[in-house]
Image (tube, rainbow, N blue to C red):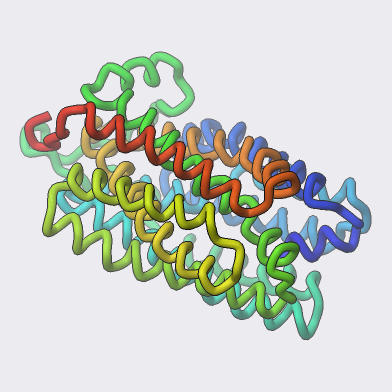
Length: 373
């Protein structure tokens, strides 16, 4: 939808990249503040803050009459950290062996939202225009706000029981904003290795996510409804992969084995992506890419939260979020440049390089045993 709104202000691909970069920068800056807020006030108020932030964003878009207001709408996204908030909740209430499946289920339900939102949004946009679509999104956010107030407890950390110390008390210290805590987390065995691996594994996905709508419109020349259907296709992939495949794989094999083979599969996928310029083959390649990439990201998140002490799960999620938003901060401008100069094949070559580095790191590093470590 945003790419169509940008056309009202005669924005090109480079300007739209700057627009997305601004949003990522705001969320990158707001991430540690959001982490401190969640630590101090609990899960319920953290999700409420995310809803209010998103509602402000939608209302600003509705009343945007020039490019400056359009850019300002990104500033209101400071606290719009839905997914990290729910990942913190799931990490608090799930056991280590069940965590990959639980985190995958969170991604699955977000995929349901992406699927339904893409289909409904494409239909609304084609029949009633972009601003009516934004108003419906704002109404949905209000509903989410009501559900959050009624259904989510104030704090979820008390749901974890430690066999030695008993139920864990609610920690009011906001750890995600302290440099000393980041240094302490870096001392956990395997943690620096996994965080570096996170950077290389997420970078290709971050590039593609930031530019996919522009690719669908400018390269494949899809209209609003077709663009919505394609985004719905990506949503279905997320639902199936994170909701079913990740849990199945991690129950059959060790998390490290799943991570290694998912990374190896991305080598072949990235190579074929670099050769693909037609829509149907591109959809097939995206299917394979999503399978490897989504599996890697869920398993990495599970690894990182499982290796850290229970009372540091929020700090770890905050660190993961900082890495992701840092990449998203740079991705729109980088992706827009490569797309404008080299076309869609450039993302395959970039993915191939990053995946080769990831596989070499996994080959060099000894296998991680969560129970032992």
